Length: 283
Image (tube, rainbow, N blue to C red):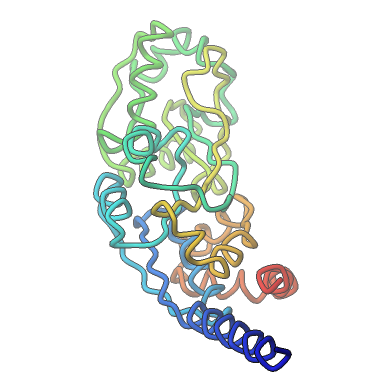
């Protein structure tokens, strides 16, 4: 009888070892979008999972709709997103087939801004300076979250303004030109963008709360992924990157580095933190 129990224990240990080994060698497929906040988080996650022994494949999608569809089908395992606001509609439509894995970062902020040298501090004051800026809010690409929220702000605050559609590049050029000449301008920014760090602007107060509060980034997966991949899930749960670090990486890219080089710099500066993540994910 004792021999039987020894054989059973040995078999269970072997089975456990094989399962751990299989998890260690498992390919993790991460979906991402080519944006300033998602790319750094995805890049760091890829490196950390590889450090833990996983093989990681990254697929970049053109928009959230395609990305959520791919995740719900299981074409990718994981994706980072801000599901409480920016992608709330996609999450609501797919949440029965998905799960939150862990928190990745916190502090996404977006809203209307003016140069710090302008006297106004609130959206409610915009009509008082409309003639100074030609009654225009300089916008970016149509259909983006911040443009939709700004269109709502124009209505809710009764702003006598035209929201000008354009591109992020054109908006940056106009903001930089105005600030170099110390001219007034009303536009929009967001953190973690390098623009938020470069330009001395102030976010206008939003007493009607049209714009969302600082948002959290979550790693999300197809439902059941965490239970099927406990070690990978523990690795993901160990990671958290402050929003200011993401902003600094984007600033480094704007100053001429590639994103890989910016992540390299962050990685080298945070060796102790990464080692602590590793200890946590190996518990």
